[in-house]
Image 1: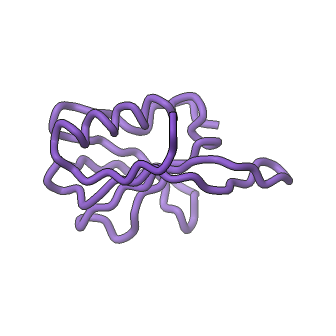
Image 2: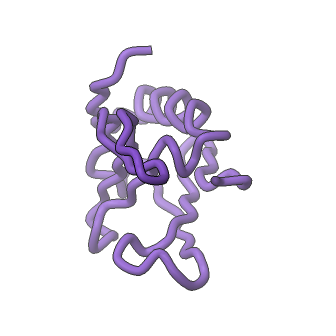
Image 3: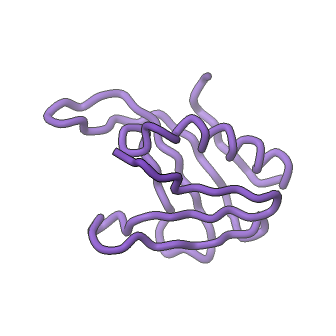
Length: 106
């Protein structure tokens, strides 16, 4: 489970700390994206593996032309900070006119 904050917000920038989704190994990568670098942000329900079980969960997907693949954050992996990520992204996208596809209810 995550113990660090992997998504930091300023008024016009996001700092994202992530692992490559293919390998999930090695050092985490960092990228700083300005609001005009973002194509879209999605918050969607999904199914996530929790041990041997598959449970209902949520994920955040950040898309940018500067990224080869979208960055994804899953609720189980980021459990301590996931609700803060959602609230921060909603506010960031609203104040910077970034498209957000929010498919979960709070």
